[in-house]
Image (cartoon, rainbow over all chains, first blue to last red; front, side, top):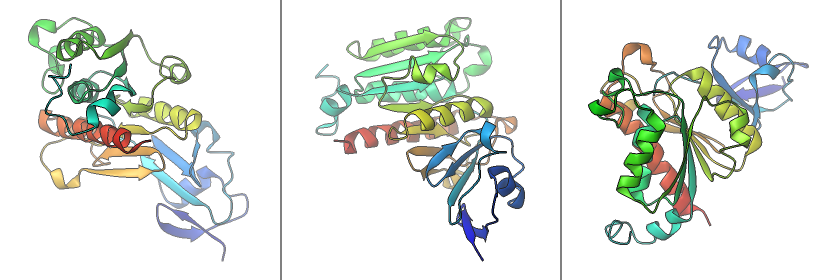
Length: 67
Length: 198
């Protein structure tokens, strides 16, 4: 099975998997996020189109209001 | 100036005096971070905010009751110049946008994300991380509520540093001490990164 790592969790990788697909698999429903793939920022307007390579390390951080 | 920093850690004053830090937002996070950085001896700050001081800000922000109705950024600038007149303070009273990251903030060595709304935090971190992947950005993320000190931490993802508990949001209320703790973790981290830089 090909995999990627999302916030330290190993999940199955599928060809053509997008950032949005990962968020769905991980059940991350939060709107305000920072996403990095292999250390590179992915802006929110590219969540639907940016595909994730096999073996990628993905970080997803939830942003909280308050300051 | 030398007398102000006579109690500083050895070597700190010289290094900080050559550094520039940007602070986006001058509210609970920004006003507290700015004061700590100027007291530490930072050479130049770029500060920006569009808000006016309101009574409800005084529970956590570095302003006084007679300043209600004044602009936050100019009031803060005056306060900082009263701590160290040799610190160069560049101030902007404006609504910040993505374009400001490559504009007014472009000369900074480190960015302090000091917004209140998660939407604003998102575009700032995205834009800074995209344009300047080698420069640190230090975000305040989860500083609401009170107590629960053990939950506050720094999460590093490359050159992005998230300070806070990562889960609390402003709807539960904000407490002076907890906001100041997270703000000063951000300031302390910025100082540490500068001290460890070449």
